[in-house]
Structures are given as structure tokens and as C-alpha cells.
Length: 121
Image (cartoon, rainbow, N blue to C red):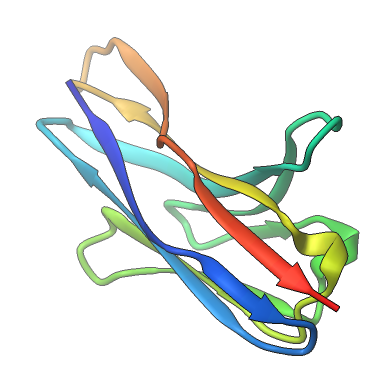
């Protein structure tokens, strides 16, 4: 069973920085994509940023220029560096990992337990 183990997060004042990391643990064949999503109170979960195995990245418009996603050398860890944080970035941040258990499948699509990010004005 693959698990997504998150670390980082916390509280910061507006304009500050925080970093998150997520490592996929367990036995698997390959990871196709890793990403971060967030869910603010009363809102739906939304994509923040994701990176594919080929290195392609996607960012939601509201974080472009402030947030950088990257993968570790072992390709089983993803980092999210968040700068110039705004109160609107306050949410629970979830790591998502997608891949395959073996060359013939099955696929997996797993979520971390979530980590709180709070930005005060």
C-alpha cells in the first residue's frame, strides 16, 4: 500500500514563506504525477500545483509567480515552496500521488492526511 507522508505547513504572517514536502512510501512501480491541492473552509478542494514524471508542471492561476513545485532526485518526493503568502492561501493542503503498483497495473491515486497552512494579515 502506497502512502503519502506530508510534512511542513504551519502559521505565517502575510508576505511570509512556507514549504511543504511529501514522500510516497511503500512498494510501487512508478509515479506518474505528484501534486498539492488545498481546501479552505466552505470551499471545494482545488489544485495548487502538480508535476509529472516528465517534469511538466501546472499551477493554479492564483499562485503563479509565488509558488514553486519540484521533485526530489529519487522522484518519490515533491516539494512546494510558497512565497509571498496571502491570507487567501489559508487552507488544508493535501498531497496527491498517482502511479502504478506494477508494470501491468493496477494504478493508484492516493492522498495524504493534509497539513494546515494559516496566513494571518
